[in-house]
Amino acid sequence: MTVQANDADRRSERLADLAEEFRQRLGGSRSRAHELIDSLLAGPMISTQHVRDQLQVTSTGATNLLRQLEGAGIVRPMARVPGRSNRWVAYEVMRATSEETPEAG
Image 1 (cartoon, one colour):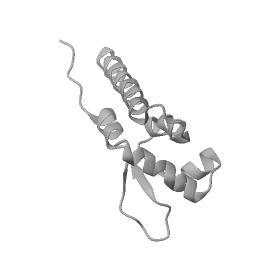
Image 2: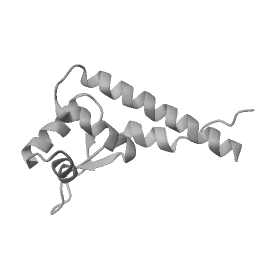
Image 3: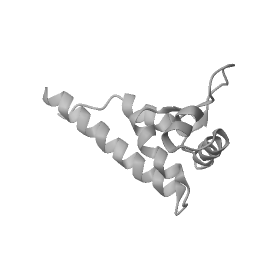
Image 4: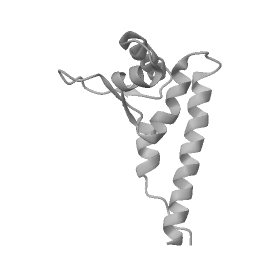
């Protein structure tokens, strides 16, 4: 059980570090893109529809916010699927949550 707790602690630390790094990448921007960081840490895939609903913005506004995150190197667009909302992924978050962590010895 201790190994699992230590692993969870390390993952939490990596996510907290990523959150800080993402905020720094966005800089002093007054953009609402900052509000999406916690959503990305909870789940690294996000859609324009999710952003639109979460922040109560238009589809164009949601796309613009996601493009700001893309410009900061936080997300990348996924291949478009006809009939579905555009999706974006934060690969660094995926890596941080799926990496094997060395056991403390």
